[in-house]
Length: 329
Image (cartoon, rainbow, N blue to C red; front, side, top):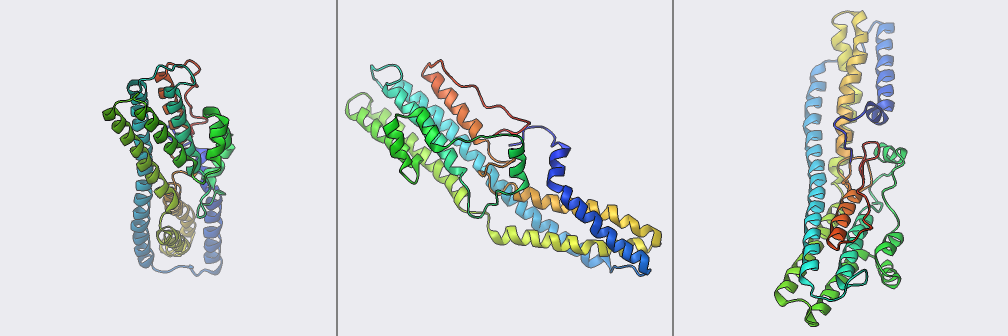
């Protein structure tokens, strides 16, 4: 997630400098041919204007839909934060166990939960078949030397016993089995009489909420933005961009041949606007892919970890994740 109020020019240029060069040379060549031949390479701007209006509506629809996917993803993680704090409070309050310290039931339930949310994070950041990681928004993150993820094995080793971590690593969906272990240990505590029935059901409802939110996140991850909308949006934008200089040359030629050259800066500005609108939608449609505008899951997981470990009154609590070059992961 980009955290600064304004996007720096170098980041904007990293997305668009190649296209700006293409826009310049493409329009310059057409203008030069028009001036050299004395015959403007153009036609009426009316059909081009109609195409531009239709493309603007279409790209606007795509961007709205992409933003809805991004915002829904952020709401899912907001719900996970709230439910995690509830889980920590219930664990520290409802579990009537005389054990204390690192090996206590309370510590196991909370540390296992921290492992769970990080497992969800790592699973969501796995590569999708339809997502291209060789994009500018990914390269910007890599160029800032931001490495938000660790392997699932290293992460589980931080919070869980070796044999338990090894079991989860053998599963296709480790997060699901971690939560199953939470339910099993909670059931043991209930049957041993260390948690009242009413409180037991409260905590099981919280576990159900985690499964619901995990499923919502996996739905966004595993179901791509419909390709027919994403693909044809790009096709229509480029159709407009390719046709645009012919209409501009025709309009400026009416003012005199010398004014034809004004089509170059006009074309560059208009084309850049439409191209940028298309890119904005592309960078929002997959919010879990470790790119510039994604949901900052690493930071959210660290916030949850700090809150829960403070509930346990631990002292070796890690620091919050802070933005690196205005990028928060």
